[in-house]
Length: 186
Image (cartoon, rainbow, N blue to C red; front, top):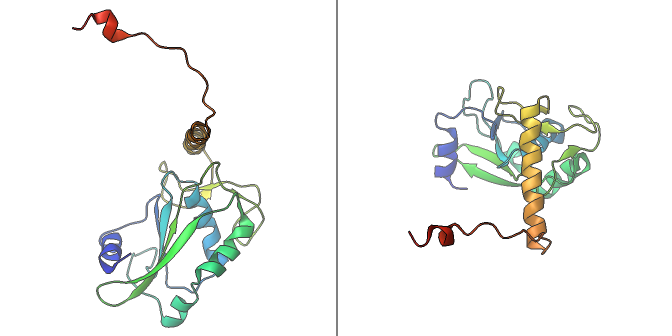
């Protein structure tokens, strides 16, 4: 990610189902676990930008000490006990055009089945599926309606069908009608 990319994310942006802002804070898994689990269940994943006040969207940037606390291996180790299956994410540190530093956590969508919270934590509960729905204001919250559940189930079914096709397990389908032959070359 480059300075131009962070500028594009921050200029006039507001939180959405795929974009979350966090104030300038040091890494603390308890502050991020629910958002990472929720974004892993969104169709295209999402991004968490750290260093932007999440109510006013005012740019703050991170101090050198806060920035140094974001170490990807420790971040993954901190989130892993909460995610079943794993939540996949990466992290970039990037400066805006004014020289303020931000951390952008890019969370990938689940690979096969939705990510379930595996254990209780400060802001999460074991057995809960967190999601960022398009049908309500952007927030990371437990699945609470059929539309959000349907989005996840349909995504999981499509991924499962793609995986089965890739490994060669595709049922034989009967040949359909040959419309070209019926039309006689029209």
